[in-house]
Each structure stands twice: as structure tokens, then as C-alpha cells.
Image (cartoon, rainbow, N blue to C red; front, side, top):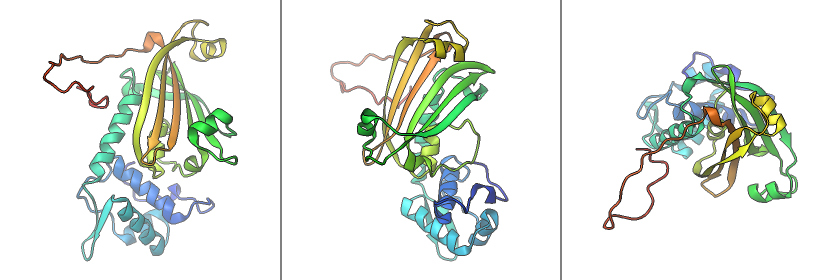
Amino acid sequence: MPKSDTLSHTIDAAQVTPLYHQVRLVLRESIINGAYIAGELLPTEDELCRQFGVSTTTIKSALKELVNDGMVSRQQGRGTFVTDQVVQSRSWSKVIRLIEQVTAIGEATGIGERDSVVIEPDKNLRQIFGLSAEGRLWRDRHIRLLAGKPLGRITALVPADIAENFVSVGAEDQPVLLKIEGAGVEVAKADQSVGATIADPVLAHQLKIEPGAAIVRLHRRVMDVSGRVVEDLTALYRADYYEYRTELRRYSGDEDSSAPNPWAFP
């Protein structure tokens, strides 16, 4: 999120979420996305009050939470500085962007038809997400576009208690996983698989292809540091738009035979 003279539009006093927590989420997302780099001084409390349109007490509480998160440090008489610990979070965000851009589509992609709704999960989903009987899921389903043409259909499921803390800042086509990070969730790992299927009539119509056409299926399940599932995503891409590349290297018997870190791209 770019730095701005006014951020009051990102704060909603009508929300159940406390104002200080909303401010914390916006600042945290700004730091993770690189608007403020390690060692950089944040705006003063008075400047933040003016930008967000909130009280000094609210800003102090938000900054205290960021200190607890390890995102910033406060130095008396000097101000509030972004910590070096942020680098790891920012690196993860870049990895997630790589995952989302499975065909090197870069900035040419956009969002087409979209539907976001809170749903009551079935027994299987309750077990996957560890939800109580009252727990609900937020489902986001949209068509991703490449140069204005349908590329794939993305369906993401997120616990509703996390989704209600999403902050509406930045581009509308921001990946859901970055919204989850912006909501204060510390992502620890993700299990991902790539397979193949064929287009049913509904998907074929949405992607403007023939029923039965080849489809690349990408599934990703993301967990936080406690092991809780925070996202379950299924992406169905047109096979004629999809290309997967990797680099293979020979390892001798004397070297560590364990598989390379799947996140460490050559």
C-alpha cells in the first residue's frame, strides 16, 4: 500500500473490529508490502492521527500492537522504526506472489466476474478448518483475466473470523493470501499440488472453452504458525495458457539427499 496523506477511508467506525486494530492492520500491510522498509521511521503519532482521522489513544494502541508483533520498535525521543524482522515477512509475500502468478502473467492479469459470500461449511470442511458448530467460512470465487480474456477460475475458502478483518486497501485483485497476512495472520507453511482435470459445462462457459477441454488444477492449503488452516484455494486454469518450468540439478551420493526447499527457486 502506498504512503498517503489521508487513510481515513480505510477505517470504519461502524465495524465490530476496534479502531486501533483496524489501524494496526493497515500499517502492518503497508510495512509487509514495502511501503516502509527496515530501519525507516514511521510518521509521528500526530501525523498518523491526522491521516487516519482517529485519536492519539487509538494510534498509541495500534503502535503497541505492532511492537508486540515485532514489526516496529519505539525509541523515546526518536520515534517508531520498522524492524529488521519484517524482511522475513516481506520475503514470504514475494513467494506468494510467485505462486499466484503460475503462468508468469505478471501485471497483465485482472479480475472478472466475482462472488464473495459467507457460507455454512459441510462436515468435511469443518474438520479441515477445525471449525466449531457455529463456525462459518468466507468463500471468494472469481474469474482471473489475462489481457482481458478468461484465464482461470479461483475459489478461496477462509475462516469467516479472519475474513471479517480484511482491510480494503490496495488493488481489488490482490491475492486472498496477502489479505490474510494483512489481517494479522502469521503464515507458516503451505501444501500445494498441481494436477489435471477437464472442464465441465459451467467452467467451460466461464472460461470460453469447449466442455471437456483440458484444465490445470492447482490446490493450495495454507496454515498459520499454530497449524490452523487459514486458506484452502483451488485454481482451475486453461491448459493452453499454462506453462510450468523448473530447473533440475544432479546431486551426488555424497551430498545431502533431502529434497531442496520447494520455495527456493533457482
